[in-house]
Length: 338
Ligand code: KG4
Ligand code: ZN
Image (cartoon, rainbow, N blue to C red; front, side):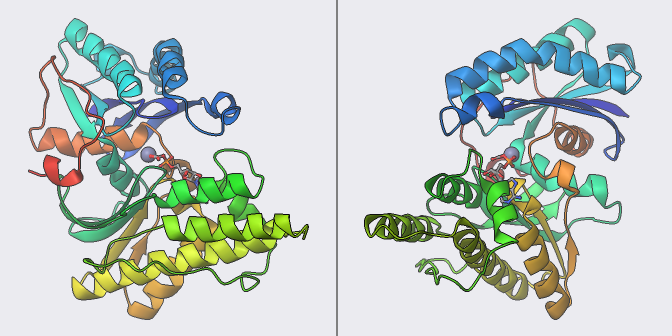
């Protein structure tokens, strides 16, 4: 079964053709980052406009690269939630147009479910149930993946997402948006013990995250040193900050894995591309005897292959939308579990 996936929830216009939820025949991503970088973050109005300009050629290129046409496509999967509403609506409207004109089924896919599914593309042997840490620019969740379309969120961030924290710290120390990858590079040159940053205290749930205190600690350090006219090493701050994020992520996730008796852990989302995060989870999972799955780097960030892949499982579970499908800016994974 060939599914055309469409993703436009933030600043990437993406389309992909995936066969049987695993064989990626094409994966086209048009990034708008260079433009948003001028403003230090994603400008929703600009994002919507660029999606509208790019969506048609991105889909056509995905079909051409897959050596297929709409006639050979069995269904269209589109990200419908969560995300920037104007951005989501571009992909949804396009997908609805394709389905209306061809009579193909429309599959609404949750963006976070898509990130989780990125691991199925790379690892044929990964099957639910397992625990998944989803760390992206907008979300930080520990999720029990009960089945391909059934989830239980056991931990979430109370404030900033992990990627958001990376990006804000990066901006403070002088990197371009989105700065996660620059911190990653600088951290490899720096001394991770140069600074000691706080771990958050989160009351109520042992599995919930909080990153705003860590972000503030780094910002305060940078301002403090600047006021004294002292030089700060970007490399050392990056390494110390990244080490702290890795400790927080691994401590919470490994605790959840132990308590829930999970034998398999997957990590997903843009921040799962981070070399420190990947190394930290490899080490901890080896110690705990837990099987670890990490997505290929090209499927960590936003892409449409993950949407087509999850669309395959949603379709098999009977999740097909009518042509009045709307976008939803905020929606928890718990709400789509069936
Ligand atoms: O999943 P994603 O592409 O978009 C959302 O759904 O939010 O994640 C984007 C986030 C950004 O915050 C970006 O800085 C971060 O992923 N990111 C990284 C790395 N590559 C991307 N963070 C740390 N290290 C990286 N290597
Ligand atoms: Zn994403």
